Length: 478
Image 1 (tube, one colour):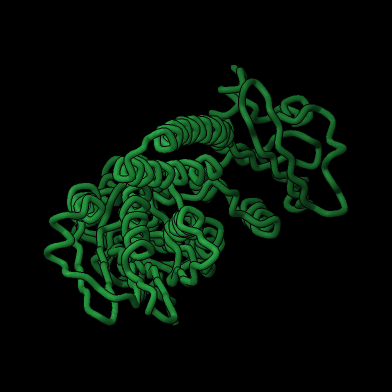
Image 2: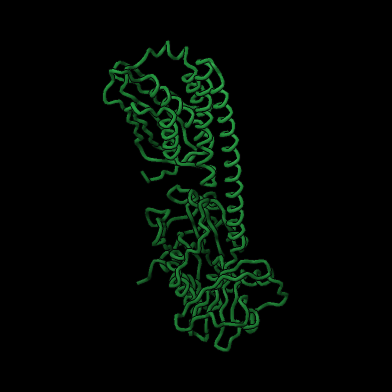
């Protein structure tokens, strides 16, 4: 009874029995590739009308979610949805990183390699990754030692018609025979050695003479069958994986990855982090200096009204300084909003602290990341609201005095509220005469592009505001 590949090829294509057998042999390697690359893999063959292709084999990754809920085998591939497939069939050339739309209407990024039989292109090998996840490509080496060993063994079983598999791997692949000579290298390996200064093809040469880690192979653990090392040569950072095979006259396989850009990016991030820390540290020191000058001026003035104005200004400046202090510690342009509010709470409580003060201030909610501009705006708003509650919300008759700051984020929308159980106030009259509330309304509207709601009664006051957050990563730490 014919299998799926034979049945589909016989019905929809003009492939010969020999060509179908080539496709069938390649299908056996798809699952290994899917697991190694964390991607969906397919084999498509051109139909008899020579305008559309048909999916004859597939493999979904086992370690990450597939882009497909259903099987794609047996479905037709339209040229306008998957132009990379059409291009490779027409030109016989690989197509890298091209956008496509799946049969389930999902946007993906495709890389397509031609499958040859003699001088004919009999099919294409397709690697697909979800387009939304493609930009979050990880720089870590995802292959396990066992995965490398499995892939290397697959390579030793391929005949010359099947070297397409090694050309689909984004690493240099070298096979060394039992006599120590290079019996195979893929195109990436040859390009890598050209970057290292080689002008003669390494194919057929003694591996010990061209090994990027030098002629000393003692680092290779024969007993473990697998060894890895990172080397720096000719200005390149390379990871070298060596897998013992002892199969089909192949002694071992070598896989080399150029991680120079990764290491350069790491250095740039470190330098940027140091520069950001220094910048925020200097801003914090400057703001604290200004606050100290205002404090000195306040001590010298004889006007109580002027002293209160100077103290309020100093408090606002210190609120901003506290944000830069947090950013200086992190060395990034993002900060957890809960850390910001904890800092504001502590600074404000120190400012208002009196032995007779008996007010509980709580912060409820899950922390989330915001950028430095948003954190500064939120800090100023909460600082004003907390300042007002501590100063005006309670009188001598108030019991169980409590102020609650609540934060939450839902689908990128941030909600912050400051609520007390004080005596309340007349919203209209206070807003007209309060500089603090004027600052609050202005910041929420102009800086945060958000909305604010105020409610107050004899049972207390609640002022809440919401705004959109460009950063949607939630920190689960409470």
